[in-house]
Amino acid sequence: MEIEGTAAIVTGGASGLGNATARALAARGATVHALDIKVDDAEPVDGVTFVAADVTSEDDVRAAVERAAGSGRPLRIVVNCAGIGPSARTVGKAGPHPLDLYRKVIDVNLVGTFNVLRLAAAAMGATEPLEHGQRGIIVNTASIAAFDGQIGQVAYAASKAAVAGMTLPAARDLSSVGVRVMTIAPGIVDTPMLATVSEEFRAGLAAGVPFPKRLALPEEYARLAVAIVEHDYLNGEVIRMDGALRMAPR
Image (cartoon, rainbow, N blue to C red; front, side):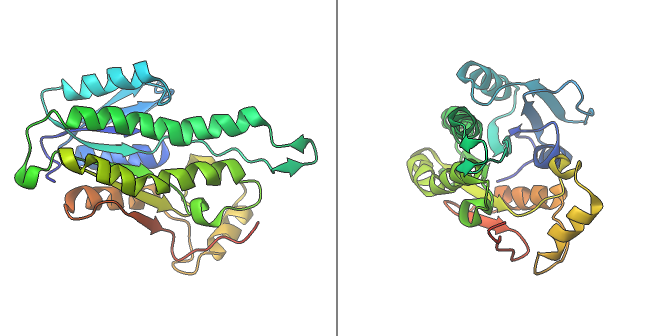
């Protein structure tokens, strides 16, 4: 898939993984529509239009997809990075896991991802096909917590396991319209979510990674996403980006 001359949607595009990916795609000639719940503080980037949108809202996402598809360039690329990661034990000192919190995590991480996937795939299916009938690529974001969920991650791990689990059936569903579906499962990435913790804590996280013994960078996620977009034979698979890390219970 050639990136130059295409339209792309990146969710969670105002910071972290999404922002790095939006920048990487724009640098390669895509017109990027970066969706996020809040975009007022997003630093301007050439080739990137920031769009305030809630990924769980059908109206917000439909409008964003229509905007990207009507930009004068074919919508070929979607990278879903939007997500949240609050923690709570199934039963903790305050009692059972709050059900509303569980629903919120599932709604944003899983339903939001699927909402963007389904609406964007429909728009991609209306574009002119490229060689071998290819029309687009959707890259979703899971986590190694999908496989190695830690104490307090029951909601997050469930949501990310579901994202990983829908990769193959979604790829099979969308094969009829020439849209590939892939998922990246990052390990511990140095994103704004970690900005509030101490250097000592960050060093402890890095020490647990077999190799290289450091936190991953958002730009490394972006490079992998770009490689997946450009590699036309990657489809229906989850790729771990974790330095061989397997998470301990805590």
